[in-house]
Length: 196
Image (cartoon, rainbow, N blue to C red; front, side, top):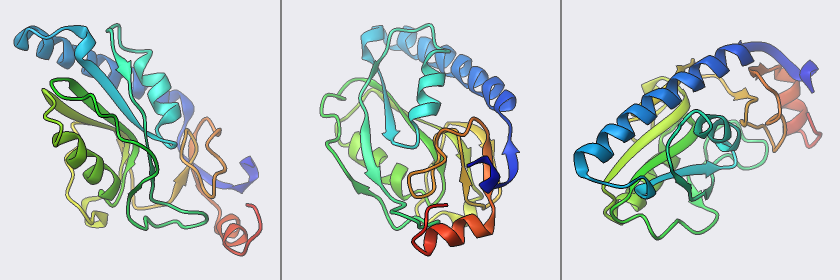
């Protein structure tokens, strides 16, 4: 598996440090929001977008000394061996109890913007008290098909297809602890029907 990675873009130590920083930023902002609005900690809801945000969310929420709940949502946008988003489609139910809550949408990557744009729109319809978007990775604006503002960004990366730390190619590589770029031959093998 590691042999399929051409180069490491972001190593595990760098990821861990940045995730800890993001957790502190989020905790500070949410505590301020709750204090300002007179809200209670029970109103903080993290909504990770599965499956890519699973690893990131697990590490992120452990950095917050704050009472919160999780409501996951599943979205399909990179089917099979595709390295380009094919548009976002809900693959499960969206949480329906977000009215009046302080919602944090968590995703692994802001790429085309279609996934986060769709989820943000649907969440906003429930009239939450606030919505924040937190992403581990953000690609350049020119790849965006839908404009989305991420309030918290771990890393800005070039427009390359990356795997590891929750990001996959054809369902594989999510368990790599670093974020890397696959070798072209690994992608070709996967696209040809073999497993990279």
